[in-house]
Image 1 (cartoon, helix red, strand yellow):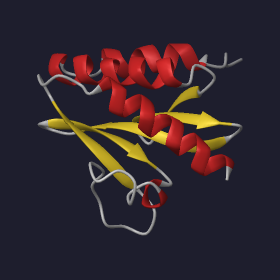
Image 2: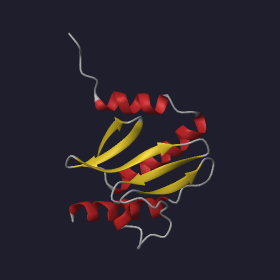
Image 3: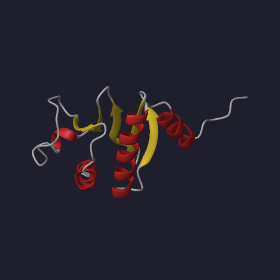
Length: 121
């Protein structure tokens, strides 16, 4: 019989599989997001760390070769207020965070709160 894998174990495995620079930036992003909204649920979907509220995906950490993105699923609604967000799609926008660069934690916290407000509607 299969034993279900706990979400915390999947999140830990997600970080274990990242390269050192990726891990440091992703963990800094995770801390900043959870400092702003400790009630968010974490899961690993599509190979990324996804944060959800009340069953709705709000944001995700997506690693790339030179940077990590904090992706906001309803980011288009936030873009007019936050020129730091990049992207041109129908809904998703992201904050690009370069490896080995300091993270603007205050901006991340403000973005997280704005994203939660946008989801709550």
